[in-house]
Image 1: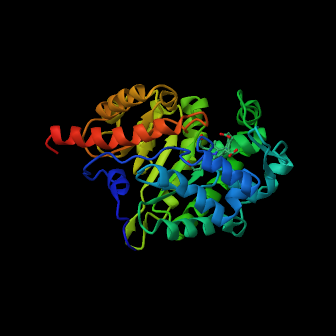
Image 2: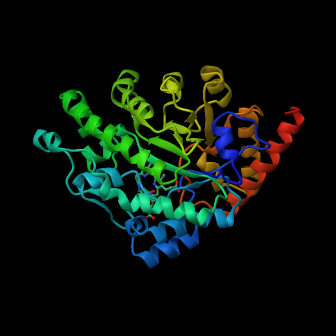
Image 3: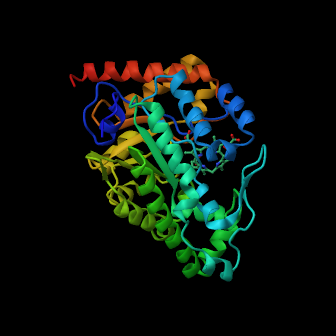
Length: 357
Ligand code: CP3
């Protein structure tokens, strides 16, 4: 298969030298862009955007048409997988996700089965359609939620600030939680492999809530299942390596264990010190991150200063993909993103030249 004309992201994820630091932004297609809000109004709702390949393609490309980003990310959501298991996903306007049938009793948990991939055809069609529209400009990133993070929404039925239902289950019936996580891990592995078959050129696993666990619980209930996914993924497609990125928000203290899964790169949130992270993992993995999304709420000068600080903290050695430490806020002024992209490209070239790289 043809490599993208701009393959800087794929090279950086494999720790190969690049002329500059590539960047993309978590949630780069979203509500901070007026053209996204217009598309969503035309489509009807967020899930209508996801379920229609033409709309999903349109909104995936919107941030790339505005800014010279180095990657596209599939427009979809992590909660498509439990929805395909029959839990009944909805997004009410101005609220977060809701499941109509959360997993709250043993019978429901025992009845849970791996997501039938046919029910996710709309996602795979979107992947194919986005690849055609990208025409090899930049690589396309596929993604899924981690088994644990999916389980949080499946059991709580919505977002949570105390995770009392899933923790209640974890500390009373760990066998039942393990059953859910096993089903999720098998579903996510099949789901990501299908995305790869349809043209995703790198994949990322979002473990947004692993950081709410103790170290012991993290290893048993989140990391163990991500390790199984990494082991089950197609790492090469049509002669090209498909890099795998793991991201546990709040997981800075477990980076060595995460690198041990055999993934290619780790996402870092903004609480992690890049030099310390590099010292911990050595040259085994690439690192992706980790500017505070809140720093995009300030002035253009503030954005430039912070972007340069982050680049200098990672240093000019190969193996850094610039990103935010979590998703971009819907309140971000788009012009600050333009500044960010320009500064990251320009300053990272300068740092490499100065280092003689
Ligand atoms: O990065 C991208 O541009 C790709 C698209 C993407 C979305 N969700 C679109 C989206 C990705 C990678 C996700 C992942 C996702 N979804 C995660 C993991 C990453 C993270 O942010 O921690 C999680 C936890 C979810 C679940 C989810 N989806 C929540 C909690 C919400 C509501 C909160 C919010 O920001 O609205 C969503 C909705 C969602 N997913 C939106 C988008 C663009 C906003 C929907 C809208 O337009 O109203």
